[in-house]
Every structure is written in structure tokens, then in C-alpha cells.
Image: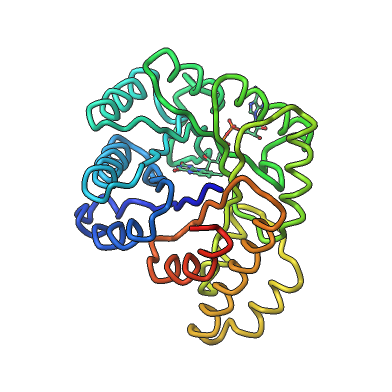
Length: 278
Ligand code: FAD
């Protein structure tokens, strides 16, 4: 059973030290790895921060880092130089991504899909490659079948580990796993769990990723949304409940979107340590 976390770098204007304490606390929870997002807004700065923070996780906190790397806004030359940086910093694990399309970040047209990035990285060194997957379908996919076909392509090209988009309805994940199995996707697929611990977070995340919301979840948000303490406790309880059910149903792993909140990650980890066998 894989148990991992996701963190994000501080804003480019803030010092790397701004997240040191968070990382140190998360490391004490002993996840199998911590993945570091590639700073929103991209640019070389984003890559540099991901690199530095991943190296810090490895060297100072002794946790395996997985560095995210989106590609559509970069040329092959730019990606090559990021990969060189990864090598210098001793980073061997990469979550290869397409990146979201945004008018603020023009596409460079060297890469169209994550699978093309995976192909490219494999010519540049010996990296362990991870890919993203979408239990409720990627928003731009033409159909669920198409999305799964492209996911299979990503695995065939060399992704040996998949991490899912967040979801709140475990049934959507189980149905997705079944489709992956039928399609011949047999690498570990981690379930992405995001504890929703404040109202702003839920509105933002749902508008961004289009996750469907079970009634149990919306009722909880409506009932407790007014109180920061209540929504925090309810959000943690919901995530724990999801994890217990996922583990009972034999999933490969849990990837916790920590939102750089070590207190929430600690409470969840402590609540499920027995069922994770940690
Ligand atoms: P792809 O696998 O390339 O898929 C994108 C779309 O293209 C899908 O609809 C797919 O069906 C379709 N497609 C794929 N191949 C083909 C093909 N050959 N022909 C036609 N269509 C095809 N973004 C960041 O900028 N930074 C991050 O750090 C980051 N971290 C993330 C972590 C996780 C776990 C997840 C789930 C997402 C993350 N994202 C991040 C967001 C991600 O970049 C977006 O969701 C993006 O829109 C898709 O990326 P992808 O790698 O899944 O794309």
C-alpha cells in the first residue's frame, strides 16, 4: 500500500524557507514519497523551485521526492535544461504532465501531450516516470473510452505509476479502475484524496476539476460551512472515511493532496495508520 503526499512551492516572491517547516512536519509522517507541483505560472522560476524543494526533501528530510513537470508551455530545449537540473540535484522521479492550457502561458508546440513528454524524457536519462489520471474523465477528453486509450498510451510509453485527480465519490474511482483493468493498464494507480477543510477550497477545487459531489458531501458543506472548526473536522472525517473504504476495497495507494497543511495531514495519517499498516 503506497501512501504519499503532494505539496506546492511557495510563491516565487517568497523564500524557499517559507515552506521548510511544513516539509519537515510532513516528513515526520513518513510517506513513501512527497510530490512537488511545478509552480503555477510556470516559467523557469517554477522549475527551479520544484527542483530545489525536491532536493531539500531528499537531502534534509530523507523522503523520496517526485518532481512534477508540465510540458506544453516549454520547448524541448527548456525541458532538457530542467532535466539536467533534476540530474544535478539527484532527482530521479518525475510526474510527467501536459499542463493546463492558459492564455497566460502560451503553448510552445514542441509537446502536445504528456505521453510525448514521457517519450522525450526517456531519451534523456534514467528517470522513474509517473503519470496523471482522471477517474471522472479529463475535462477535454472526447469520451471516457478515448481518455482511457490515451492513458494506456502513456503507460505503454513508460509511465510506471499513476496518480489520480481528486474525487469525492469512491464509486467513480472503482469504476475507473475496472475500465483501466479491461484496457490492460496494470501499473499502480494511487487514489487522489483532498481533505476539504474550508469553504473557499471546495468552491475553487470543484470549479477547477469538475469532481462530482455526493449528497453526503454537499450536505456536510452546507451544514458546517459557516464554522471554520466544524468544516475542518468534517473535511478530515470525510477524507478518512474515503480512505478506509478505498483501502478496504484493495486500492494500490493513497495520494493525499496536503495543500501544505501539516496539521490536517497529521490528523488523517494518525486516523488511518492502523488500516494502512504503518
Ligand atoms: P495528458 O495525459 O496529455 O491528457 C490531456 C488530454 O489530452 C486528455 O483529455 C487526454 O485524453 C488527451 N490526449 C492524450 N493523448 C492524446 C492523443 N494522443 N490524442 C488526442 N488526445 C490525447 N499541472 C501543472 O501545471 N503543474 C502541476 O504540478 C500539476 N500537477 C498535477 C498532479 C496531478 C496528480 C494531476 C491529476 C494533475 C496535475 N496538473 C498539474 C494538472 C494537469 O497538467 C492537467 O490536468 C492537464 O490538463 C492534463 O495533464 P495530463 O498530463 O493528464 O495530460
